[in-house]
Image (cartoon, rainbow, N blue to C red; front, side):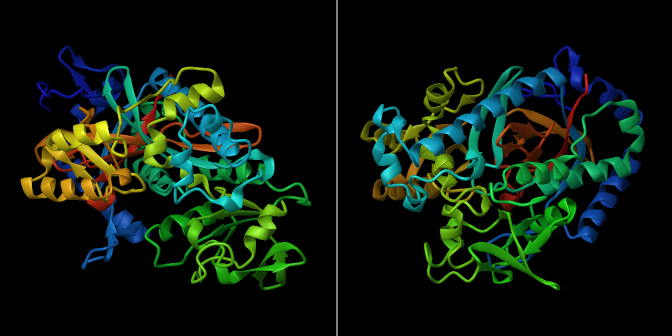
Length: 474
């Protein structure tokens, strides 16, 4: 693998292999390349047989696709992970406090730390959540924080995913696949487990049950159905937790509670892990055309008789314009400086920032404020003149809809190719579980990798793949 890359390489430096990869590198050097190629094909067959696929919307060939899996793990030392986990916990705690504040006293707005206009004009802000606190005070039960690395000790948060973060099923299946293919590796290298996530998720959801819950809380996963791009994950998590997977038509209001239809009649539900967007959750409160949610569920929710995870209205906290204020938000609620850095962000709603962005489009990454999955963005250095000019017109027409950031020198990790190991850019999505008394962060997370040489876009919808993420025990 080339060592003269201008990017920070997580496996190698000029003096040799970095500490987290030493044992793995020793093992890899003894392997037969043909055997590893065979294992790579074996992994693909496993994922296809298991049905680990996703859909890409908005394309003519929008059939189910397999997310490419790379068999070289991304490895973090225990000390690297400890710093990351502390930073994620601090950020998640601040986000939860921010949501409680903006839906109640709005002290951060009165203090002028965050502009009131950013909340008032935000489509993700739900007036229906005003003056209401969810059971246990938890808004963000599951959070996925996208992190990139630029140096030995340089980590940046790219974005916060506080609505319905996805990808945890790939994290779990990636590890299971590696355990099956290379059991000897895990006996030689001590890696922290991720397999407890489903058990911890269920425990965290149960701990967030409403106060009128009797006995062990009854938990369900609410899915939009089989045509949703993340349906595999919905069914996978329900199965792994040992809970019911339901659709909106399976639920109804009965005696002031939400109940699910079973073979023995209706049973009261205490906690709904919903994978249905806010707009479709309750046709009486939001989109009247929705067939995916439960009519009247917001009334039951506001009465305190059901827990919805994540809470409706959490999307306002992962808005990319709000993201630009996260260092101030963290300090406002925790009294501490943010452990994890933000990427420098230009808010195009501000005239001076817009002028700068328009002048430097070819050097910047421009994103929609509400965008996700790599859609609706411009990567200036990789864009054609035509694409830049098209985006210029979009920015002029709706400047408040965009933010812009410098192009970061994302770290690289090795992937397995026919010619051996080759560096590719990556990000990391650790998953945090929040309950009234605890924040539990799975040791590792989902590493997404840009499989195309030189590409900075890691999203599966844009051709990226995934890797197993190892956090060493010591």
